[in-house]
Length: 273
Image 1 (cartoon, rainbow, N blue to C red):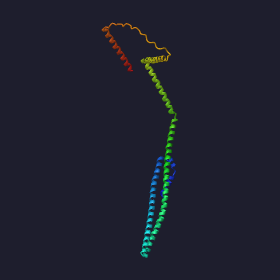
Image 2: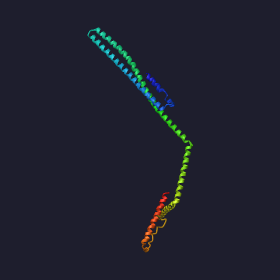
Image 3: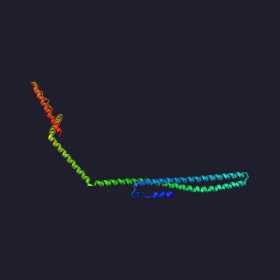
Image 4: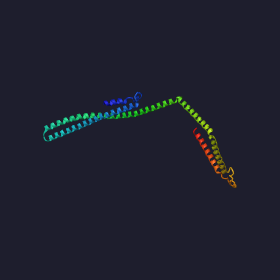
């Protein structure tokens, strides 16, 4: 029964005290439950040995009762044969087996009672260990929840530091400045390359297209009169140009080549900026 007292002391210990120790509570709790399971295995072995003793005593009691019955049968057989002395000896042997049977019965009864108590204690012990396992899981969950809350509080404390927000504001201002400088550089580039003029014409074309779509929609809705068909004009007589002399054609070709060469050089100069 010593093993049950040790287990009872182990289970009755307050597991919550492990949280305040320097060791890792989760590892400590797992180790305690592991020790409990090992002790339970040993307890089951002792209970099994006690059950085996109880069965052995019961078998010995039955054997002695069988021997007593056998010697009684022999005593009766001797009486039928007219041999009273032999019958007396057989009855004396029967009495010995009766006494042994009574002794084994008493021991068996006590052992059976002890086994019943051990089985009950083992069931209670197993229930307590299962309860300890459940409590271990709850304690581990509480530990993890406390760690998570602690981490969140530390993070929130870090966010209370105004330097982090000041850094964000400073970076935002710097990015605004970079964007403004980029836009200014783009406008200067357009001024020198003449792209601003192209942009104005492109905007004019987009606006003109919108105006034409608006006029067409108004005509479709009847807000404006329909468009008049274009008048057919008489073709003007084609002007017959005199053929250009060959020398003039050569000069014109050379002039065009020089103009194209100057344009290509200008484009390369712009691209190399």
